[in-house]
Image 1 (spheres, rainbow, N blue to C red):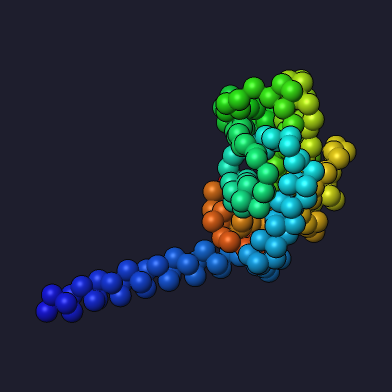
Image 2 (cartoon, rainbow, N blue to C red):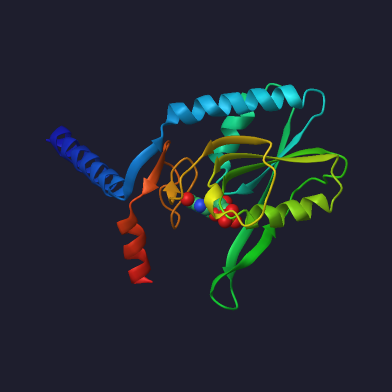
Length: 207
Ligand code: IMP
């Protein structure tokens, strides 16, 4: 009897898990890049950084939270000594209670003067966020400062930023997965996909 009861509880849990997964994937459209394609490209970026920074002990800097997947895979693809640090930003304006200008809410733990910095980004769209953060870092007199982005959406670019390392150019679509979220969801998907336009439309109607 007991065995039967626990089987049915396990079945219910499995069914609930399956339903939650289906619901999550309903918002997801065309897969643009598979986990394997992303992994292969990161291997190439890691090899290029290892070649260019041998003996320089570079500091990789990322912005939480979107970059966590890329940063950890990139670090493992780098074969020379390297260290890592993170910043965090907010685009929420508490006074206006809506999206406002970018604010730094967590600074780096380490000083960067005289260090070779590689700024690691998940995705660049207008370039305004990156431009703001690069200005802060440049003012701290690093020995060098370069950018490594996994994804680039060049169509909306408002500031011209030289990108030394780039994974993929993307079309002008809202994408999720591999660290990129929509309102906190979809970040953990191992692939990169378009978000269905209905999800964006519905969210806009609700807010
Ligand atoms: P930018 O300042 O316009 O370049 O915006 C860059 C930031 O916007 C990224 O770090 C992401 O947080 C977010 N972002 C831009 N495009 C996308 C997207 O397609 N999916 C998820 N987040 C995005």
